[in-house]
Image (tube, rainbow, N blue to C red; front, side, top):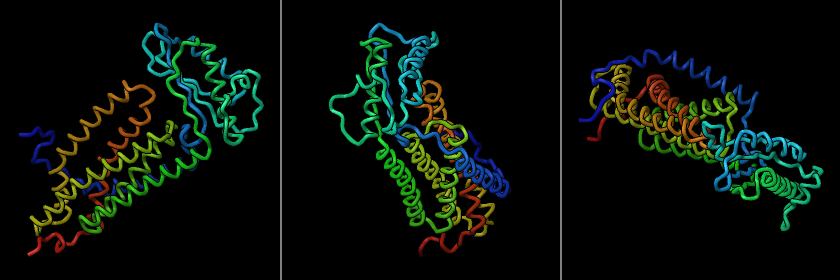
Length: 336
C-alpha cells in the first residue's frame, strides 16, 4: 500500500478559485514581461561573450579572503574593464576552494598594458576582438599565477566570442520554442484541442514567470538556465498530463457529473501524487541549492521556482482552462 500525503476523501474546490488564479497569474505574467524589458537579464559569459578563468590552490595550499582581496586589486590594475572575482567552495574558516575571474567582452580597441602584451599567446588568431579576448584571458591567467603562485591549478579557461554568444542565444531560444511546439503537437494528438491549449497556456505561463524571476533577482542567466527551463517545461507537462489523463478517464466514467465537479474530483484524485512528487523533488533541489555552491545556484534556483510554478499551473491554470473552453462529452466516450 503506497504512502499518500493527501487523504482519498479530500474534496478541495479548486475550480471555485479559478478566476482569482487567472487574475493573479495574468498580473504576474504582465509584471514579468515589464520587468524583463526594464531590467533585462544578467547574461553570463555564454550569452554576452567574454572569458572565465577558474583556478584552484596547489597541493597543501588554501585560498583566504586576503588572497581574494589581493587578486581583485591586481586584476583591476590591468585596464581590462570589469573583472568579477568570486570564490567557489568556500569553507567556514574564511578559506576558498577556488577562485573564478570573469572578464568582460573586449572590444578590440583596448590599449593593453605592458604586462598584458608580455602575456600575449604565441598562436593567436581571429579578428581584433577575438585576439583582444585571448590576450586579456592570458593576462588574467598570468596575473593569478603571479599573485597566488605558479603552482596553482588552472581548472578552467573558457573564452566565448561575440559571434558564438549570439549563436548560443538563438539556439537557446529555439530549443525552448521547439519544446513548447512539440508538447503542443503531442497533447493535441493524445487528447483534444481544449487540453492542448490548456497545457500550452500553462507552459508559457511557467516559462515567462521563470524568466521574470531571473530578471527581478538578476541571477546570472547562462546555458545551464536554458537547460533548467527545458526541464521545467518537461516537469510541468508531465504534471499536467497526469491530471488530464484522470480527467479523460472520469469523463468516460461519470457521464452526468457537472464538468466543474468532475475537474475538481480529478484534481483531488491526483493531488497526493502531485504533492509527493513536488515535495521529494524540492528536497533534492534544496540540498543542491544549499550545498552545491555558486556554480549550481542559478540552475537549482530556476528548478525550485519551476517546480513550484509548474505544480501551481497544473492545478490552477491548465485544468480551469478546460472549464472555460468546455470539453465535449461525445469525444470522451469509447468507440463502440
